[in-house]
Amino acid sequence: MDSSVTREAFDLIVLGAGPAGSNAALTAAAEGLRVALIDDSPEPGGQVWRAPQTERARLLSDRDADRCAGEQLRDAVGAASITFYPNTTVWSVTPDFEVTACAPDGAVVLRAPRLVAAFGAVERIVPFPGWELPGVFGLAAATALMKRDGRLPGKRLAIAGRGPLLVAVAAKAIASGSTPGIVVDAARRGDWLRAGAGFSRSPVALARGLGWTARIASSRVQRRYGYGVVAAHGDGQLEAMDIATLGRDGVPDEDRCHRVEIDTLFVGDGLSPVAEVPRLLGAKLHFNALCGGFSVASDEFGRTSVSGLYAAGDGAGVRGAAMSECAGALAGIAAAADAGVLDVAKGRELTRHWTSRQQRHAPCADASCRLMCVPDARLAAVPHQTVICRCENVTRGTIDTAADNGAITLDELKHLTRLGMGPCQGRMCSENAAVLLALGSVANAGTGKVQRARSGTLTQRVPLKPVPIDDLTGSFSYDDIPVPSPAPL
Amino acid sequence: MTLEASDAEFKIAEWVTVYVKGEPLTCPVGESVAGALLAAGIYAFGRHPVSGAQQGPFCLSGSCQACVIRVNGKLAQACRIAVQEGQEITLEQVQKTDFVKGV
Image (cartoon, rainbow over all chains, first blue to last red; front, side):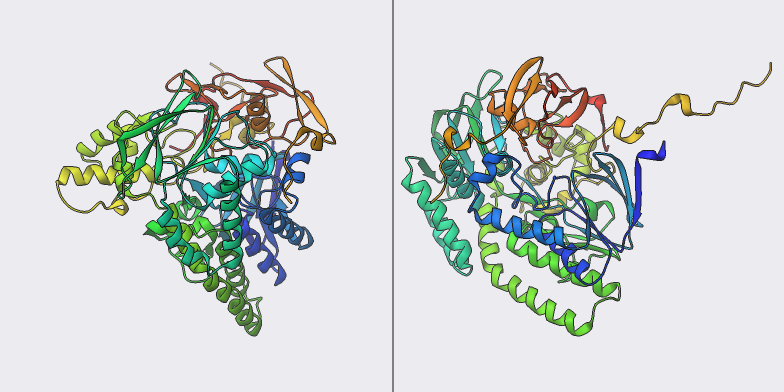
């Protein structure tokens, strides 16, 4: 039964092979630590530097900056003495850092005295009636499809949401031959101009952003500023969406709403940290709206409140790829130093290099994060019949009732409504639900400020991801169980 | 200059054939099962286990689990696995009991 289980011990296990995780692994391995790097993708790169898997994706991304950064990273990981576990889904981590995962060839059980958690971010989407229709996708879904497969589905495309990803997706969709009919941007022109000051501190990022903006402008794409999607319609599949102007407070004006016929919609409203491993292990968190919600409390090297556990990248608090590289490298430095293998002078030099780079990119990251923030008032305007938890079909109205009935925290909400108990385990809904719950509490109190932080986070349990039973049982057969012969009567 | 997509430029691509509910579907080597189905206009992957409504893939990055289907009889996230020659893809309602999940 144990034949399909791989067991191995390392000096450091890194969870997630995006910009943060890969750089943590590279830095630690360079100092001589035996490093395992685990990711559920076929190659390192994470979401942002996802490797192309088709000929078409390779041709399309030939000179793309993300592709180049990804190739550099993949070459570096390939050349380093790092044991990379591709297509491997981690579903359990114990307090003594035993990591259990499903790999294509069976179970993998790894152990190390130190662990870097760098599982990145998950997309947040402001819900609207009909968003559960086939044909409505997250905005990051578009980048995943373009980077991995090199093509987008659909004949009448719309791209909607907020933040730099919106512009990147729209520009890349045009370049890939799938020109959207309309780009619906929650930000106004003024919001972008204000962000420009922060972007200008990272000239490379600014140039890319301006390039994307120019491509959208030079195409025939209709770009709406200060608009949001308020409903999707269709019989079993997306056929149209309603868009409305958003007020200064982010609230859609239902009187200035119109219908657009589309068959495919990519919509996204920023990112939230996937801090599931730190949460599972009981690390201290702190609420940071700018970084997408509850982030992992740590020192500047990513050392968390749990000894031996480091958190880096968007999974510790959303800051983007450039910042994640730095945070990952710093976590790798700390892991090597804490393992006693890092020369002090060299450590100081490395730290100086990565922290100065971090400081350079910080204003740009702040500007990006601000564009991704969803005003509480925008969620307050979500209609009552809207599904919030897609897996368990829990609506806004059900959440409001739970708040009326005294639910304050997400765990209480889960207890009362099943929100977060479906296959996605709250990844797609918990941030929205937390705000709605806080709004409900405020409504009950009749006064006061919305305190999203009071809703807390869902308690994290294993399995971290759904696991097919076959993968758990392996070659197990009931016939293999030794059954003692029954006692004589 | 950025490459604009046109079929002519992608003639070098190799193709594989998968079977969706028995019907052959030709797709580029390496493509994700979800990407191949979507490109063929198949947006509904099954029925929602709670509401019974048509459900399709959503995040395509491994989080939402809405694209879970049976490939060669085994549950798989369609956004995470690649098409392979001769693959049998069944689109049907995924039962809640098909998952072991955290509660």
